[in-house]
Image (cartoon, rainbow, N blue to C red; front, side, top):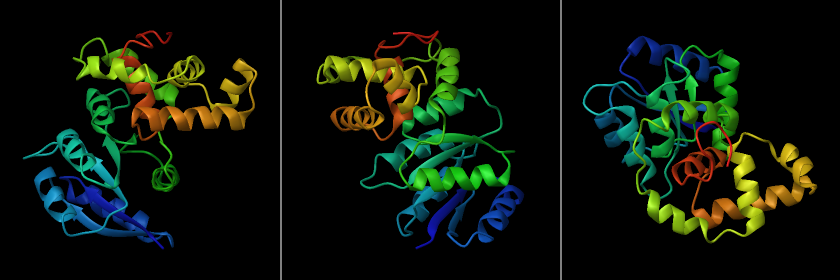
Length: 223
């Protein structure tokens, strides 16, 4: 079944370009479009969507607040934030709001398509190291939301799971974590899965964000 994609951007020309790229793929289908966040939320009420490509700077309702509302729904589509600048505070806010990653608007088509497929399959498409750079820059400036309850949630983790979480937040892959902790990659994958389940997180990007919010990892990259 084709991946159902929604385009949310106030620039019609940009949406047209994305639509042409996606329409050429046998496994993708653009099922909806919207020019602002308000329209996007209305369309999503009546349209089944797998992945939303979400612009951040839009009239009426920006992409960050729209993402927050979309991701608070039961069984929401995955959201990919589209941004003009690599280290953009909007991307930071979008990740905190529940997006599975962010992409630059001028990304090569094959990277965009790969990102949509990755998000649809349940992966995060922003490398944790990229997310960490973003957080290193913006975490000190932006207030944490609900940090205290999250501290309590970390108490659910075993010592080993906390250790794995710190390394995920520092941008290491499962293979690198396995080598560092002298574990099998399958064991690391199991630990990461338990971390996501216990903390109610979607993906590794959310792990990185939470590690910063709770102080498990500080700006600069080390716990």
